Length: 328
Image: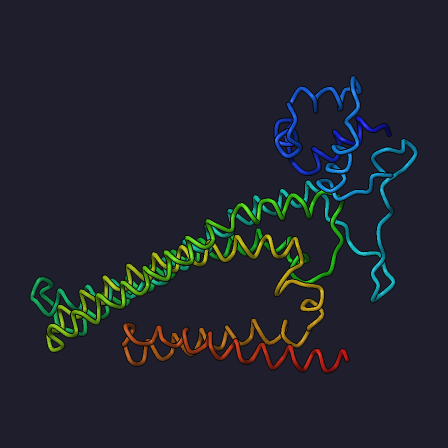
């Protein structure tokens, strides 16, 4: 393979157009076109820059007989690791964006599901619904369960379609040339959106809490008012949850391909943490639903998630420390 073919191949593997590559190299698109059609040859500085951009050696670019390095073997097991191609990486990122949207919508609906109950109870208290308290509560609970069922329409298909990418989360792998550069570029571009989403989501949640507290300060004995403000609080919290969950899943997608953070090769080998995590959150979900239905205090029981998040942070630190001590 000659230089012209290698430039074209590596450019396409990174998902760049000729204009994209030209912008990164500070040349015209026509120059890139001439290089790829073998009408001209880039100078040494451009060769060095392409070597960095494509994450390949200059020998590979310049020597016609030089092929790309063979698959690297795993240092830990001596076995060849699975290779992730540019096509696979792009397909995963596209599917992960859809997955993030569906899961965030499902989470938002789950957060909103107490609102019908509060609305039914508030309307009954002020006489809009001509029913006794218990029948009005039953109507609210039925609507709540309907909303939970609607959320499952988003959760279940999204999870099933996402299962095929499970190996990115649990297995160590090698990426083909160009994949890491492409993912890093997209991750860096997404970073500003991620910060805005997390900030906006946090502010939305805090506004919701402030709305409820302000109502309680004005008239803490006015139950219809407090129920109405609780519904408003859940609206703001749901908006915040949507922003945070969607941004978090999208960012996790980049981390999975780059094998960073919780998806590093070291973390993937932590089988204890990987086994405990899903069981922990299933137990927390059961606790949350049980307490909420028994007490009917959905305006307070959401604090279970905040406490669970703090406890999980401590648990994960302990399990990581145990894993490192065993590895040592």
